[in-house]
Figure 1 (cartoon, helix red, strand yellow):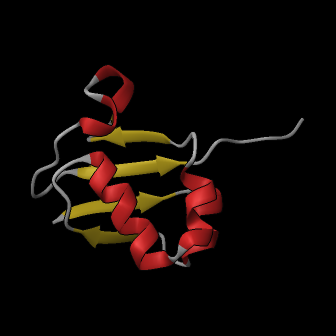
Figure 2 (cartoon, one colour):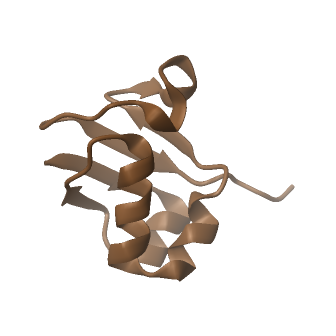
Figure 3 (tube, one colour):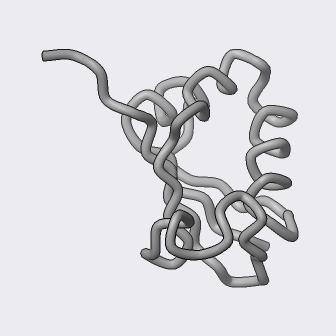
Length: 82
């Protein structure tokens, strides 16, 4: 299982601060989040900053980054405003 932490708007959209999900890569995890919490969550996942064990997936393999049991994924939706 992978621990997922939801921040700001994702926390409000899912109604939970964290969850444990099963996925083999980041894209699969994002798909699982939409399946579990509904299509309305997908808009907050667009452009989301994704950290796997504290490292931005941009420095890893992007959405193809592999996940294993015990990994921690943090999701930060983009902040808009001024």
